Image 1 (cartoon, rainbow, N blue to C red):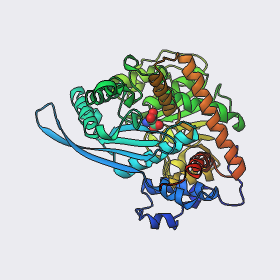
Image 2 (cartoon, helix red, strand yellow):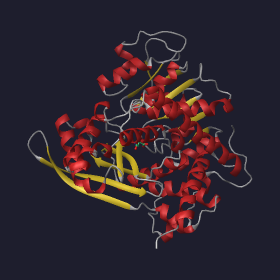
Image 3 (cartoon, rainbow, N blue to C red):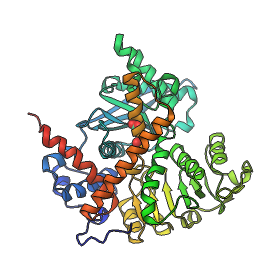
Image 4 (cartoon, rainbow, N blue to C red):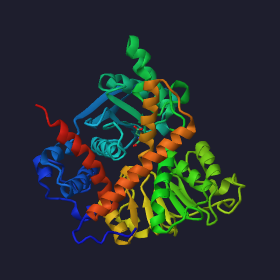
Length: 462
Ligand code: GLU
């Protein structure tokens, strides 16, 4: 794959339609750095290429529902703190709203709206019978005790109980939330129901612990999906997985699982950075030891002193060296995996990045300017709505298993996930060939064509 040589300029970043009539018609924020404006801009570029009817464009440019709540929580020291929570339901034309709940200090309405829209795109690209939603609570889970975290999760659930439901809107883990948080949400929701609704209420969330109806393979699913996409896409780049060099930004659930799986396949993870520091090892970091270190220490910083890694082999070497942020970005690798938060790859970082392929494991990790800078350097960007759809795909499997009271073995989950990821990747490649555009636009096209068909068939009420 090389960057597009289309005669028509189909690069999303170049085409961000500052003067798109839809922005004015819907009175969008004018700030070009606004994530929601950028996300809708990317969608509109793809919509123009496939000539999506205006009525569908305006429906998709705004979420159906934006729910905002404030709720008090008793802190351990006895005082009460007011928290703000969101649930945005973007679109349910393909099925119930679906998407994670984020607990993070930066959670805000525009970002949650963007992430909800991306969920609609992700589910459609993977042909899941689900719509898109997202939510969150503005808080710092790292600063909350377990008791406080539990009370935030339960009180937030109680505030949105009437807005979610097992066949209406199904939350899941996201940044700052875990299977344990899902268990508290499921329990709180169940307590608010009666009769059959109560018994079946656990289906209101996915990403649950196995003991209460979670699916095998869900925890690693997003990281596994990133790897499945790489296996499908990299042959065209002439990059074999065995021996390829990888750097990873963010070592939470997605980054650490993708790294561990890639390491198991013979790739070398040579540099990792997160909010606590950056480390490298030319011979390949021991990602299993690093993941364990992160559980115990909250991040990768200091791993170079910990000496926990004794592994050696052809893709792992013992130890690590602390590096600076710019050394991290300039480390030469085949694949760079941003697996942290949105908007971290701006023009400045893109200028430093030294790789052939960027696999977006986080949602919206690149700004349009960052995206453009990567493309100008000839770097292939595999977009997030393709790369990180593994999480919601296995969430869908969990929901199906709960609905039909069956329990799949891990082999079945992995096999079905792999099929979905390969099909989503192939749809993206086909759209790219057909429209001669970049991968991001192609993924949006493959997704919008599917949603567009549902509106063409069902029409718009009344
Ligand atoms: N939070 C994940 C995402 O952004 C998973 C969503 C889900 O499983 O519903 O895709």
